[in-house]
Image (cartoon, rainbow, N blue to C red; front, side, top):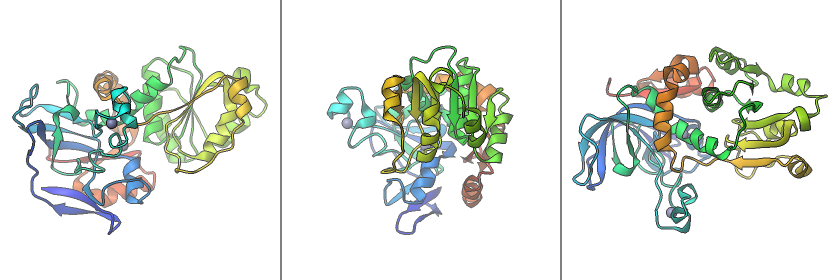
Length: 349
Ligand SMILES: [Zn+2]
Ligand SMILES: [Zn+2]
């Protein structure tokens, strides 16, 4: 089978021909991959800024059909449409036993499929049944390839509760994750959403969503709020999707009393930001992080189905589909910001 194989010693991925993987344990399924996304984390891996195995087939956001089933697997049959949760955990450590598998010292992002085990940038992938989710009949394999990123947003959604119905919201960064956040919050009924983004192309994508967002540059946002008493008229929720310490410094003073700041973007580890700690007490701020997708994949599948084409249309979101051998173009287009997300289509499903 064709696969995109990461080799850290070479510092790049390469299209290779591998043996079709086989089920080796009774709790596994063999998945024939249909759609397999490229995410920001993958680009970090390829720049060696994010941990992954020395050699691995990457791809941690994928859907496909069940090709074969291990002897102990129940609830699935050959041909079923499925999505894969790349993350698992040991289920033995104190974190796992307390219901926090994303903190597991050996699990969570530290053993993920597509990072530490062969993943979905390939025609086939073997996955334990606990990480395979059935898809509703009316949900396409293409749309449902967004289940993994949406499972991470579902975690963020849980972390920012309670969020009042009239919340005034700022999203920083209109990459794929910022666009998905705008879509999710609109789907949930929020209508007072501002999105700040420095690049023209991404602002255009945000406007094309047709969600009536207030889309502006960080500079214009700063000018608009220069003389505003943000303690009273600031934002109730700021969702940072930039992963930029400078961006976080800039928006921190815009938080209203009782507001929540969620850092969803991935800041470089060890980086620092200057914020005013007195504001945390005087405004009773909540600062929350959101780490991968503990127990949220099961919620993400019906969420993606409910949002459907209305919110998750590839064209509107700026998602472009490539064949696996078009990977050079896919990574180039992503880096140049021509698209919000690259999606590999395999097996011509
Ligand atoms: Zn990802
Ligand atoms: Zn554990």
